[in-house]
Length: 110
Image (spheres, rainbow, N blue to C red):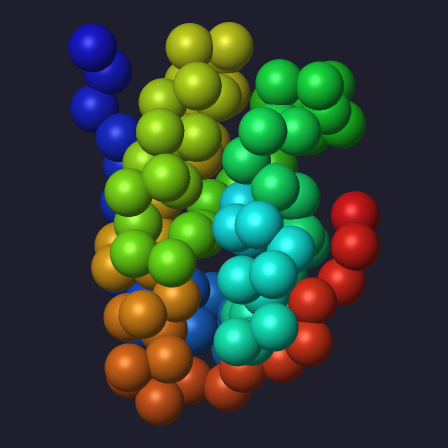
């Protein structure tokens, strides 16, 4: 089993503030997105990732997000098994992001 790389909410906020290119993928179900998303995050429900894996580039930095970090960890593991090494799980998920007082936005479809 491969180790899942994680990123803290403060690290992600810093990357976004610095204008670094990261792709934030929110894998929650559509109904869950109504509580808010990380600004600029792409909505891609977890069950659709295997169908759309070809839409990701091997060299882009991917941050997977769910409510608590459990489902996104599974998504990271799946991506790693398919050769994606630059994939990170947002530790604590949206609960940690919102709990830290970071901005919430509206979901964007991929």
